Structure formats: C-alpha cells, structure tokens
Length: 223
Image (tube, rainbow, N blue to C red; front, side, top):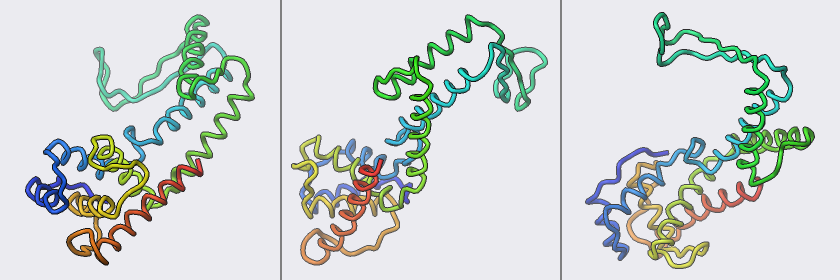
C-alpha cells in the first residue's frame, strides 16, 4: 500500500498549499501512520490476537496433567553442545509450577479481556475462544479499503488532537484532500487527480478518502 519516506520539501510545499503549519515531527508521524501495518503489534487487532493466544494456552493447561513437554528451536545457544536452529525440549513435572502457570494465565486473560474472571467456569473460557476466533476470521477478511480507512483514522486523530483538524469525526473536504495528498507522498498507488482541495478535484479526492474511512467504520461496527 505504500512504504515510502515522505520527502521533507514535498511535505512542506503541500502544507503551504493547504495553509497548515506542520513541523518535521508531524511529517514523520504521518509517514508512520500511512505506512502502519494493520495486523501486527501496532494494529488495533493485536489485543484480540493476544487474548486468543492466552485463552488457548490456558485451555491447554487445564486439559493436561502435571507433566508438560515443551519444544522449541534454539536461536541463542546457552550451553556447550547446543547448536542454533536445532530442536530443544524441556519437561515440566511439578504441581507447584503448573498451578502457578494456571494462576498467571488466568490473571493474564482477565487483563486481556477487560477484567472478566476466568478462574472458575470452563464454559466461559470455551465461549471466549469461540468469539475471539470468529473475530480473527473477520479480521482476515478485512478489505483493502478498510485497511486504508484505519490509516486515515490514525492521521485524522493525530491532527485533530494537535488542533490542526477541528471537529473529530466530522471531516471537511480540505482535510480529506490533505490526507489523500499525504498518502500519495507516502507511496500509496493512487490516481494523481490534481492539486488542491476545491471544486471537482477536491470532491473526487474527498470521496475516495471518505469511502475508505466509512469502510473502516463498518469493519469496527461488525466486530
């Protein structure tokens, strides 16, 4: 979707045309927002992916006995004879440690799910896993327009918070167009409709950005 550094001179020129006074820190923040990956740790979905991982591991711990075998691939060998990129196993057979793990994972899942307690009822845990998996499936189907809309929201929210844009949730055509032009500078493959934010040029740019933002809003509402 774009992964370019926004040129300082081009950005300054764009700001002058729109009448915005934005220093270099804003250029860097806008660049990061418009190039932000949607599904990694910086995305709004990550909290649900984390919660699902915790819930599934807690379910595993509840379903097995006291003996647990863990296996991984060595990436940083720690003792003589170990070789990187080879398997390493570790066996846990300790009731105290197993109970501590269960207690910690209960607390962690409670934190990940905004305070809901999971140390009593397995039915609630199963229901949570099912809900989180369904949301994960929705996430994977997130359309390209909604991905762009998420990044539009990041830029708008930042500029509104800084007092550059004035009414949160109520874009003006000028604001839509500024984000469109910034996206071009950030490497998004968009039509070069023309300069400015007035008349037909502005209306066309604004329509694109508004549609992306609306697609993102619909995706949020469907969660």
